[in-house]
Length: 124
Image 1 (cartoon, rainbow, N blue to C red):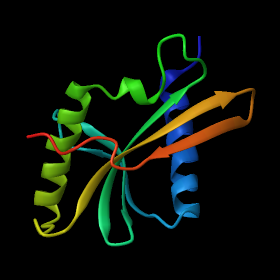
Image 2 (spheres, rainbow, N blue to C red; image 1 turned 180 degrees about the vertical axis):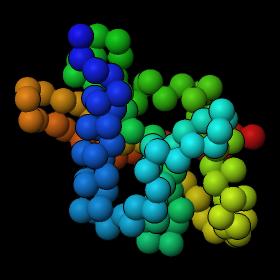
Image 3 (cartoon, helix red, strand yellow; image 1 turned 90 degrees about the horizontal axis):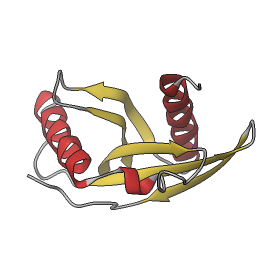
Image 4 (cartoon, rainbow, N blue to C red; image 1 turned 30 degrees about the vertical axis):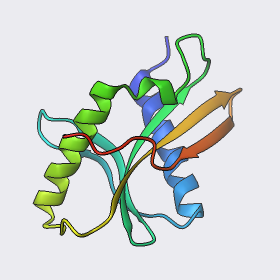
C-alpha cells in the first residue's frame, strides 16, 4: 500500500513548482490552524492572495481530483483562510481567491497538472 502522506507531499511539491513557474509567489506550505483545518499552499498570484487545495490521483476510480474538494472541505478551507488573514493582519480589501490544483499521476514520473482558478467561492 502506498504511503498517502508521502503521496500528498509529492503532489504539493509538484503543484508548488508548477505554480512558481507560472508566476505565483508561494508564502506558506501546509498552513494549519490548530484543529480547524489545513491549506496546502498559500501564495500571491499578482496582487491576489490565493489559497490552494492540491489533489493528486493515480486513477479516477474514486472520482476526479477536483471532485474530492467537497462543499464541506471548501468551508473548512475558508475558515482556515479567515484565520490566516487574521493572524497575518491581511486587510479585508486584499483580493482573495480559492483555487484547486488537480494532479493526475501516470507512471513513475509523469503528471498532468490542471490549475483551476476560482474553483469555489468564499463560504461563511
